[in-house]
Structure formats: C-alpha cells, structure tokens
Amino acid sequence: MNIDNKKLIYEGKAKKIFANKNPEEVIVQFKDDATAFNAAKKSTFEGKGELNCFISETIFKYLINQNIPTHYIRSNSKSSFIAQKVKIIPLEVVVRNTAYGSICNQTNIEPGTVLKEPLIDFYYKDDNLNDPLLTIDRIILMDIISQEELLFIKELTKKINSILMVFFSNIQINLVDFKVEYGRNQNGQVVLADEFSPDNCRLWDMKANNGKIESLDKDRFRHDLGDLIEAYSEISNRIKIFISST
Ligand code: TMP
Ligand code: ASP
Image (tube, rainbow, N blue to C red):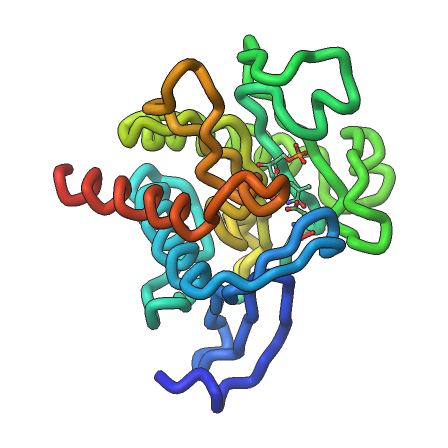
C-alpha cells in the first residue's frame, strides 16, 4: 500500500496518522525521529520507526490475546500498522514499578527503589502546558473523562502492567515504568491506543553486570547513554526469540 496517496490526519513527534479507505480505520506510521524534554532535544535514527512498529505490534497482539482491548487491527508495512480510528483521551497514563526519572526529582524516593505497589500517575497531554501531573479530582474537574471511565482505565492499566512485567522478564528485561494512552473508538469503547515501544518506557537489562543500570530505551537518547538503535534492536531480537519459542 502506497502511503504517499493517503491523507495525513495528524502528525505527532514520533508518528504520523493517515486516513484509510475504511473510515473506521487509520494507518499509524512510525517515524525515525526522536524527541525528548518536550522536543527541546531532537534527532533522527535510521531504522527506529521500523523497530518501534515491530515492538508495538507484537505487544498489542500479545495484549489482545490476553483480552486487553486495543486499537490495533492488523499489520500494514514494516513501519506502519492499521488501527481503529479513535479519539485520543488527553491523558498520559504512567505506571511506575521502580522509581526513576521525574518521581525521584519530585519526591524523596531514591532512584531504583522497587515500589511496594505499581504507582499510576496521570499527566495532562498538552505540550503547551508541558504535560503537567494531574490529580484524580482535577481530571474530574476538567471533565476529561468520567469517574467510572477513570477507574476503568486505572484497572486496565494495572492489568496491562502485570501482563507486560511477565512478558519483559521472560526476555530478561526489568519493566521499570511506561506511559500509555487511551482512545475512544467509533463504538464509544475505551481502548489502549497510541504505541508501546522503548520510546515510552524504561527497560533495564537484567543481564547487566555489577548491578549497573543498562538502559535499553529512550533514556539512551535523553541522557546520551549510548547507541539507541543498538538498544532497540536488542529488545526487538529478544522479543523475536521469545515469540518464536512460545
Ligand atoms: P518520567 O520519569 O519522565 O515521568 O517518565 C516516566 C515514563 O513515561 C518513562 O518510561 C518515559 C515515559 N514518558 C513518555 O513516554 N513521554 C513523556 O513525555 C514523558 C515525560 C515520559
Ligand atoms: N515525549 C516527550 C518529548 O518528545 C518527552 C520524553 O519522552 O522525554 O519531548
């Protein structure tokens, strides 16, 4: 399918969304671009789009098999897949299993602390406001979603976390934290949307030596920790080996 003839509906920092012939579907295309710190830092990595597309598709298919509703429909090309057309709910839902990143800058929790329970944080998806941390009451006050839907999203996110903690530990990866987004499809159903790739999570290699943290995710780009494509390829290769053995 030639994507050049397709109508661009939306362009984000790491993906483009095109209209498909079927009005209930869209084409999600992954770009090679990487941004960090609200796009203050930018670069391009050849092959990132294809790697993130493969990783995202594999994870969506895995979650669908475990009865998690997602927008994913079918594959399309090496760097794109077909998804349900959804209206994105403007919340960045972050799950933290181990404390790292912003939570350590904002609290007295030491980096690397394993949390007793996964922590779910909600941020307002608005680049102009720099994606601020929200409270449950603020979400209701802002009329972003209802209390029932918020509870549904929280429970679904916890379920996704439990499934993916096991998935990643099977490939010797510690799922430290991740960000997901939800959308409302044409039937009004809330489904997991956007992507699930090393751009949006922290993945630490459990094979790393001497207790040293070895990041296999976008922290490599954020903090100049090494070759990004090498890390994403490592994740992709381990996933390929794991799914071919199951
Ligand atoms: P944080 O420690 O910066 O709050 O990030 C928590 C997780 O969310 C981490 O896995 C990176 C991911 N994340 C995004 O996917 N997009 C963002 O804009 C930010 C700030 C974090
Ligand atoms: N996604 C955000 C940005 O592009 C921030 C991040 O992931 O660090 O700027």
